[in-house]
Length: 347
Image (cartoon, rainbow, N blue to C red; front, side, top):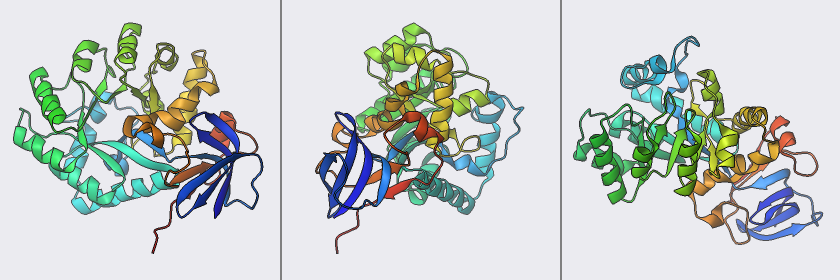
């Protein structure tokens, strides 16, 4: 039997105690001191989900003076021209490095908006099996055959924004994605406020950024139960400030993503620290960070019973170092190594 101790993220909240694991399954969650030495101590939770990434641009070095349009706007932004010229071996190498760093940082899955059409999705699937692949079509006009080929490999479609594409094109892509039972997500109100009714009519699984959103926009996201993924470091890089406190006050489920690898690596503690600083400056507190960092990303992807540690679940777990009882500030400030418990395969 293996034991992990410290604080445990359960459906009923965080308890101080320990868990017991046998044959790769959590068999007990108990309060108090463990009966035997533990393999690791800290905050015990299912692996984190990085809810928005662009992992393939990891090898790109950028000029900090470039605008968001110059750097990432399709089709001629620096990122896109860089990826078009990158050979497949280099792309696989960069994505593989990103996936390794993600695992080292306690991340079990990352939701990637993968440029490059069908080819880009195929390379990502090969280089990082844990990635949730949201492909982006290459054609300027709606091509159902291209979308079908992307969806054969990908988990869904990730759209740049409604401002970058023809509305009828986007609606056709959304309908086809929905008919295949796959995920649609998109950037929204990042550079400018965009029509929230149009965005929500696409039935997205989540939207990303919403830095220019109004309270009315946020309330509509809450009412339709569409989560918002905030990428604080990326937003600040481009001199934009996400209205995190207003999102939470409006009842939105907020998750965290690290966005472009050329700007921010897959380090959820650093991302959450930036998120916390903005939140506190807007009148919030570190306690408001628990859902966005620890569980809301998993809610986007998994059934409820995979969001928390529970008896009977497969013991694929992350332990974030934390001295003493759980404290979010201690979690973020502690830069010690993150422990991953991965069930051993039965022979």
